[in-house]
Length: 551
Image (cartoon, rainbow, N blue to C red):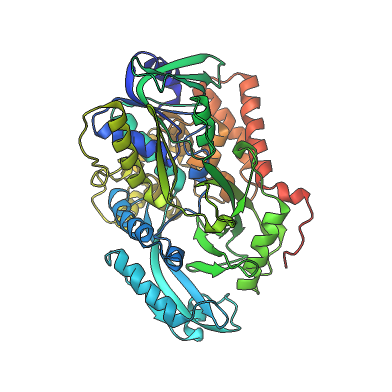
């Protein structure tokens, strides 16, 4: 996962015939690569941009059972999700952490408090009562407002306090890819697949033809079978394999980031949007508050997605309805992210009504997986590998990823808070930096501390207001396959999503830092900075419009 060895990794891709060539470096692709490699299969993982570039870094950052699915009687999905939540807590306790949720209930809500509490008992039961704690019904509006004082008091009847989990979706993806890499699977980014040949042939390997986005070179990769785990690009890859395809109904999800002083919430608050009755959240995250998400059909190329004034107006109206004293306006938004859900097409008229279950499709020696939720990625990955093993006629053991810790959890034998205290006491780093290192890297934080031991300047903050330090920039290139400024500031550190200026003020220094490691020419440095600026601009493109209906 050393970005400086990318050339050698490309040579490794072309030097053998793999059991499986996995296309797509999101959470499913990385999970599939880890699962398959652990079963003893020879696999490689290729991605056209960066690990977790698409939907997998643009979620609500929640690992949850999907409480709202109970309303639609999707009991199997809730059972699977709540139990996978328990598994992920076990295999990645640093990345998947418990978070208190608050569900306020109002007089005119479609379900009264007593009925929601019945649902919560079902929710706890479907999880086999393995949540951090069981839910608590708060029957007094006053008591709920003591917990969340900014909530609208008018008509409040009480609420529910319960546990789910929060994660860093991009880094959960990264750790699965890292786990696969440690098992010998080449992982290469910025390889864009243009054709997949011979998937229906019964002899010889399947040929995956890709273009190296950095050099323009064509690369041919051979495999006994191919797995298409490209999310919203699923149809494109199927068509590249001469398979007619129109499986995906992409829906747009926008999240807005606010300074905590503009909207301080003590829980992840589950709310109902006044316009359409959709569930959305106000989430405490990285010292900020996130409001999201939208759910609308979206035909735009995922690479060109932007946040428009209509998206912002919808979320601001919902947030101001729930927290009237906040009086949020577009200028309060410091950053945003937007992604597309790769939902399976159905006859449902509403995007929100489309089921979130995944499906697996076989076309000769091409296996495609689409749909699903972040929370259930591991189960989806295991099922996809089962199908791929059958398609290529291989012999492989059962999936073991439910019992094997991800890299940052290997050696993490103490409670996470104890681990964070040790980081601070051993390094002398500020408390917020130590907390970040513990929660982001887990046991791998020792690699960061070793780098600081060699050069104390690496302990300096990249942005004076945030908790990211320069050692992480080096680490992201040397051990986490970061190739561009965008990779580092958006997905490895989230600085572009938490800094008040979207990390524009530090981008040039980061480019200089990375350029020394990766040997960038002046033209390449300029290109990487321009790419980053375009990404950041799309996230705040609503500022060029005049939103209406925000109040």
